[in-house]
Image 1 (cartoon, rainbow, N blue to C red):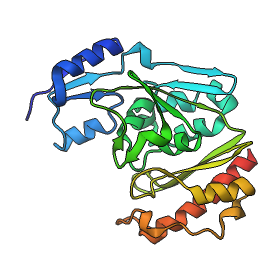
Image 2 (spheres, helix red, strand yellow; image 1 turned 120 degrees about the vertical axis):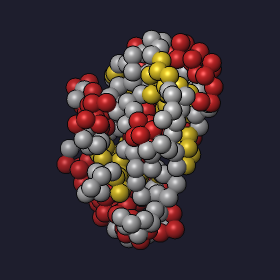
Image 3 (spheres, rainbow, N blue to C red; image 1 turned 180 degrees about the vertical axis):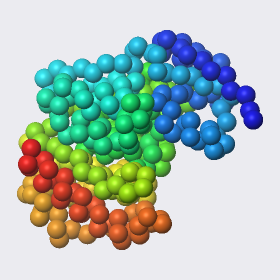
Length: 268
């Protein structure tokens, strides 16, 4: 066994101070959906846990016109059931409702998921497609610059994700092909259509984590219909290959799931 001290700050300033004092051996705890299982498996043994769940500055959902800002401490369930978000960007609320199971959705948080950047996480696909911004206690980072590789982000040591924000598009939808056992995305696609074009964010399939499918974006910007991506080829070398599916299988999934997401967007 090992000792771990627990700290419950009530403000971002207090959390940052604790992180500075504890140094590299401290870990922020948000929903704990990744960190706690990792600790149970002895794959992580932080000397200090800094619990962010009681920091009021990380709470709240703000919708002004089509501008949406979601506090990093908001749970997936709170996002999924938010009438404010549903009124302008129902696709994002629907995505949150597909994360994990009820227990995960009521504990896991937006900030924790974004900061962890699991290769099968759902939010990164949406934030990439929506041209979102990740806010921290130090700066603002465009989604295209924030997600950098498997479990790798632009966050610096001790930096805290305080919120995410984006402008709701004219049409959008999220579709996810789930592993039947874990329910993680083997491929999840978020499509967002605006007057100036379409963006497509993909998660679960890429070998380097979530990415934007540029060929799909170009095709759908010219013709926002499922068949628009039919003739496209997704490079197999860029896809994950594991016991759940080969790279060729996942490359095909990107097309299939994108078509379903477009159809869902058109139906709504």
